Length: 94
Ligand code: SF4
Ligand code: SF4
Image 1 (cartoon, rainbow, N blue to C red):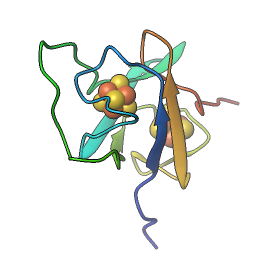
Image 2 (spheres, rainbow, N blue to C red):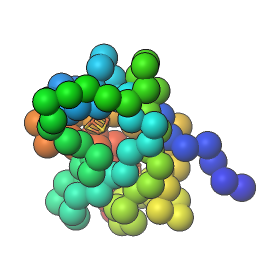
Image 3 (tube, helix red, strand yellow):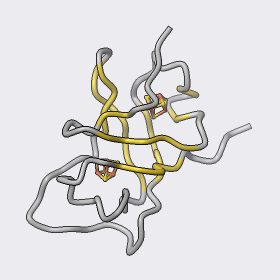
Image 4 (cartoon, rainbow, N blue to C red):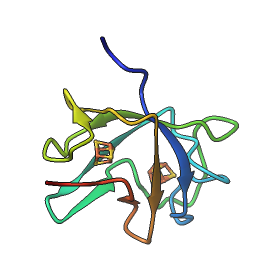
């Protein structure tokens, strides 16, 4: 059975246009590479956007090698994002 999409419970990447005390994007895509999973929705713009309050979800995750990946979605209930490079802090391999 399909899980509910993972919530982005915190994002410390404050340079992102979707960050307002957390992720306000309706859904983010996690991408990156095998060394580092990162949020592909991350963007720096001279604007802030998204939902009125933080409540972002992981709509898709391209890191198929992550142990939490489930049919290109995140199988966890929640993830945290951080660092200047918007890393998925729950990324785990092996
Ligand atoms: S999770 Fe991604 S889109 Fe959301 S605020 Fe952080 S870097 Fe931006
Ligand atoms: S924990 Fe793994 S499956 Fe979930 S979003 Fe991060 S990299 Fe993707």
